[in-house]
Amino acid sequence: MNTAAPATDLVVTCSGLEKIYRDFWGRPKSRAVNGIDFEIRRGEVFGLLGPNGSGKSTTIKMLLGLVFPTRGSLKVLGGSPRDLAVKARIGYLPEETPLYKHLNAIETVEFFGSLFGLPQAECRTRAEQLVEMVGLGHVRTRPVGEFSKGMARRIGIAQALVNDPDFIILDEPTSGLDPVGCREVKDLVKLLAGRGKTVLLTSHLLADVEDVVDRTAVMYGGQIRAAGTLEELLEQPGHRRLDLSGLNVEQSARLDAFLASEGLAHRSQPVRRDLEQLFLDVVAKARSEQVDSSGAQLAGKLASHLSGAALLDQLSQSPAPAPAPFATPSPEVNAAALEKILAPTVETPAAPAPVAPKVDDAAVNAKLNALLGKKD
Ligand SMILES: Nc1ncnc2c1ncn2[C@@H]1O[C@H](COP(=O)(O)OP(=O)(O)O)[C@@H](O)[C@H]1O
Ligand SMILES: [Mg+2]
Image (tube, rainbow, N blue to C red; front, side, top):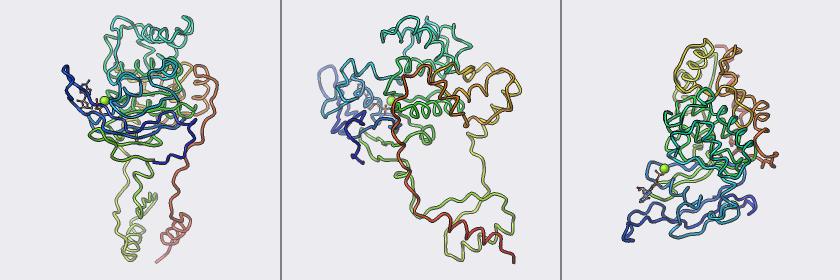
């Protein structure tokens, strides 16, 4: 892992971190985390991935000062995780959303706001905006004890943002959410990162994080088995994927023959939309037709602060303009929405430069064009 980042840009540094849970008699029960090293830089989205039981939640609990490391060193926001000033700058969505079932959605977020010492009026304003933002505006006064798992996840995300945290830790944020909810959480995470927030999220569903994280560590058995940027981890040297549209049968056959003559192993098949996009399109279309659904309404008016305001506005009940694909929130509207609740813009660190492919795209494209345009 690259350790060149200046210390002031490091939100988390840990080395040799280990956690052994013990039973009542002090005997080792499980080695949940087994000597891990990693760092998280300011403004990045860091994914802690791994199957159930691999140690992700325990790692997070150590970062939050909820669990003592058995060994190793750990710094969060330049201090100890047990320091109250550090805790005040962290927003946390636990794996299981603990809710007071008799409080309604607004009261729940207000309650968490009050724990941070926010003035009552400010708590109310933020609660209203956050509840709207996570798509629960229509059930804002309903007791959270009646919420489905997905709705509980949403209210959990709202409470995690009430203190306008610098560092946001989301433990399995997409668990229990339908694909629309997953997409929105991912858009929200990107938006927060764009505002200079640092985000750590965990998941055992890789597709749920693949397009949001800058860097990731994959855990198994309490250890980090792989770490790096997605490009570093996923790129397969020598492999290229070309998406060609408007190809007719003859061109396709010519292309196959050319690739075979070059001795290049290849697989040529029609391109399909992915299932997630199909799902999102179906929902967007149904919403534009005002089809009734008793499920969680994805955010109505994206209040003012954090979320994919444009995205949610597109989906809201009001005479919506033509349905737009979910994955295209307007950055301007989102940014304006964020302004209202988030602290003044922090200096956003430059996004890590993507690893440039070594292949000369222009040359490849020119060759392909020549080939496909060629007459027999
Ligand atoms: N409080 C605890 N007491 C004993 N063992 C625990 C406790 N919490 C977690 N573990 C064990 O530690 C391992 C890692 O758990 P966890 O950190 O929750 O993993 P993950 O979040 O990746 O699913 C598991 O084997 C789990 O059973
Ligand atoms: Mg967990």
